Length: 119
Image 1: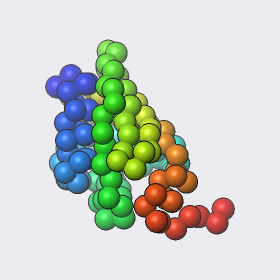
Image 2: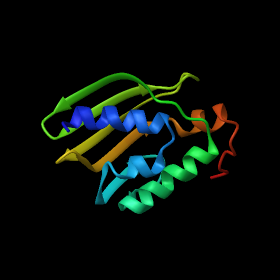
Image 3: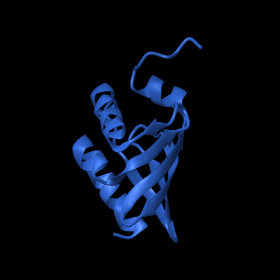
Image 4: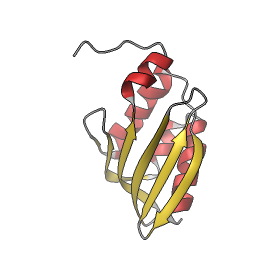
């Protein structure tokens, strides 16, 4: 798959809350760094992260744009509650090697009525 096709599949699996399916899109030593948190390293750890996230909040990714440049894809997204963000994906041989996501953590926590960290 091209980087753009990989991210289209990522969105499909994300919206299906399919953590095992999502993990298959990553290299064994992949890194997922959502900037609000420490990087998650390794396919299994990434799968566990998605499982935790899907059980904590009702998340939906609505694609606004997907751009592709060489081995990179950029996803601009929004959700039904109005939160917006973007993700940068380094895709090698149809699998995600590195991902970095930018979004407003405080807005996400408030919208989903989740606890807000004291620090």
